[in-house]
Image (cartoon, rainbow, N blue to C red; front, top):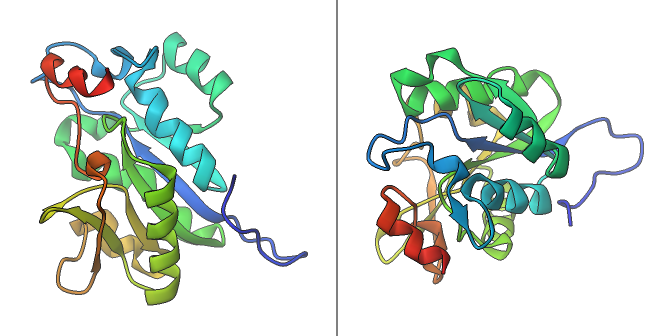
Length: 193
């Protein structure tokens, strides 16, 4: 179910989900986006939740490919090609956020493509908190900061360049560990059982 729609005649996009999936996965030893997790490619889980809670979804990748095309035919998202992805997460984040402030976007929810246990419930709470506080909001579980990060449009430039603004932003306590649980090594796929 997408986010609450705006009044009729409003041309704003609402919330855009940005799934960062352009990393090299060096610790994993292979392209972890395609590792099987609960019968689906790992990347499919972030795309599914983003599609449930966002009005539009972007996925940031280093290069296009047939597997990605097949996945996006099932789980619609706009592929954002980021040739600078080797420069790290910051480069991917900048690629995913560029130009959104010009498209009447209310805010962005930034997901990591290797986090299969983020719940739609928590993502919706982050969006609600962002709307209420008008600040970037990050989930935290037992003191650990996590993802997705919710960011209102007025903060996109800062977040694109520097990441989550710890001093100005708001931390939202989440009970479920899915907001901090990621897959870095093949053994981490045990969370997908």
